[in-house]
Image 1 (tube, rainbow, N blue to C red):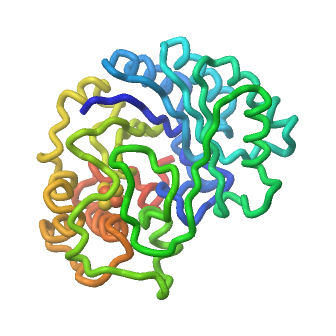
Image 2: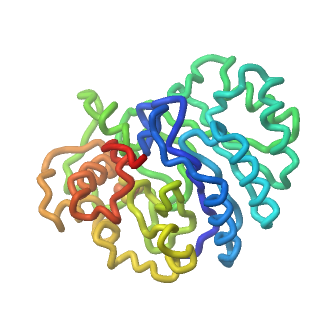
Length: 303
Ligand code: SF4
């Protein structure tokens, strides 16, 4: 594992409850990170050779504004780049968005990623994401969009191991419960999903860290916990082929996960993630340290 980026999920809480959300974020979700925990994670990250940046995401990280800003400043002081993923809910006007964002404009190399699609209320020209974009341009913060399209067909995935910035809905997390029932969507037999489309498990370049200490590449498949081990120990002891979930996924995708554990999924599915998520959900009790936290599976809350 040659980590280049650590993504801090500042909380699972969000003002929205999007149908396509990978991690079941909602206004009721918890898992909020303390500033002390975020700083310790950043301190450990900067010790990793090749680490380039810290990405703040969620949930909605701007809900925890003072903590977010202090952690972002600490990341910058540590010599790391900062990316912030937000839905821009705070942008009542462009001027107000400038007030929120101005302190971030002082951070060298600061980048904003704005969730900008119909799931986040962006179905007309004047919306929070557009206001954030205008504010960022006004004060000189580089920004890009994360745009998830309506579900329409089997996703082919994207460049493995990179954050998902666009394309169709991936059927994992809430998308499975909220969107997968649509009978008009095309499906394929379970046997055909022989590859994980989005992760290169042998060459992980970015990890997510949540407020419970869980470290994962794909949401809900944990490779270590920062409350129990240091980040460098998690990296050094990473043997994906020995992991009870990642091993089968590497050998033959979600179909192999189903086969390995004799799971009762012999029908047709919307994409590899659809089959993978259902298989993992069926294995929650068997691998509670790997398949966690429960909120990602829409099961319950830890706090
Ligand atoms: S197939 Fe499974 S592990 Fe791979 S990206 Fe989809 S949900 Fe994640």
